[in-house]
Structures are given as C-alpha cells and as structure tokens.
Image (cartoon, rainbow, N blue to C red; front, side):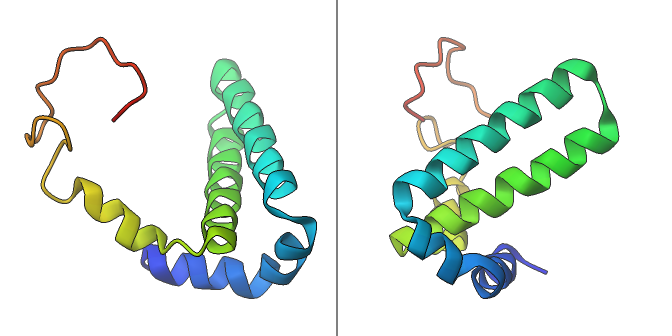
Length: 100
C-alpha cells in the first residue's frame, strides 16, 4: 500500500469517530502516541517501537483527514530533497529550529 491508500484505510476505520471527537482531541491522541513511541525508543523495545510507530502514523493520518490534507501530496515537499538546501542528503547546518 502507498501512503494515500493507508490514509484512505484509516479514514474508513476511524474518520467518523475522529471527526466526532474533534480536531483538538484527535491531535491530543496523536501527541500521546508520540510519547508512547518515545518511551519505547528509550527502552529499545523493537517490537513496541514498531507498534507505536504505526499508531503515531495512523493518528497523524487521522489528523490530516480531519484537516482535509492529502498526506501523500503533502510529502511532495520533500520530492526534490531538503526543502531548504535542495540537496539529498541534506547539507544544511545542524542547528535545527523546527522550521524545516
């Protein structure tokens, strides 16, 4: 499956429930899953990392759907390499400020 198909699958499973819950609460669930992924990474639990990664992606796709964003189209931002320097691999300075 490609990213668009995964987003459509997550919509089929959860869209109505997530839309009813609302954007703020659905986003909060996503953030909570990111925290669970962080804990799994710290514990170096490979299976739990894989599970939490999938949960994070599913919740992020739900947020995208609520916002009317096609996740696959959004990722076109990176098709030509780093959005700042245009290179693959990126050659930007390492002082990340979260504005990539």
